[in-house]
Image 1 (spheres, rainbow, N blue to C red):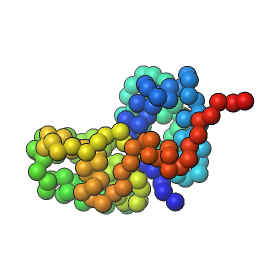
Image 2 (image 1 turned 30 degrees about the vertical axis):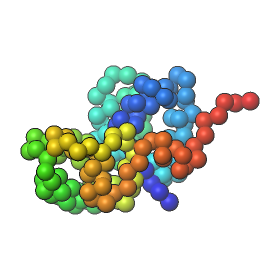
Image 3 (image 1 turned 90 degrees about the vertical axis):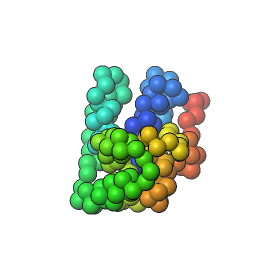
Image 4 (image 1 turned 90 degrees about the horizontal axis):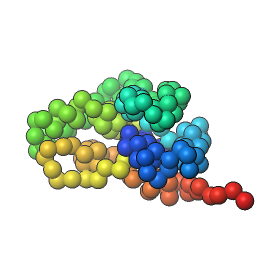
Length: 163
């Protein structure tokens, strides 16, 4: 079974664009159902980042708790140095490495690596040395990374109007 770990941009873009709470509540219900089934999660740092806003998404995240937004455990803490070493040994500018090591992306990648999860993000790989993108880190560390749309298709999500 594939277990997915969602980046903050999945939630933010869903709310702001394709799956607004007001017109596509089925997306949010699907996330909760899949979380209940042990298939979809995010991490505490992503939840904290989103809760920094003052909107419906922040409220939604606050209601989920650590059953959805997983806190780091010893396995994740042990994976952090490997992710840090990978980032430091690439050709990224020092500022890019420092930024990466201070944001939720670093923990998201370590969490996925430690627990063999698939990262879900809207980010795309880039050749820039100025920013470490999640897909680049995942490729470099052998972690599976997909877009939200790939996840929805693989999991046969369907948001169908009622009869």
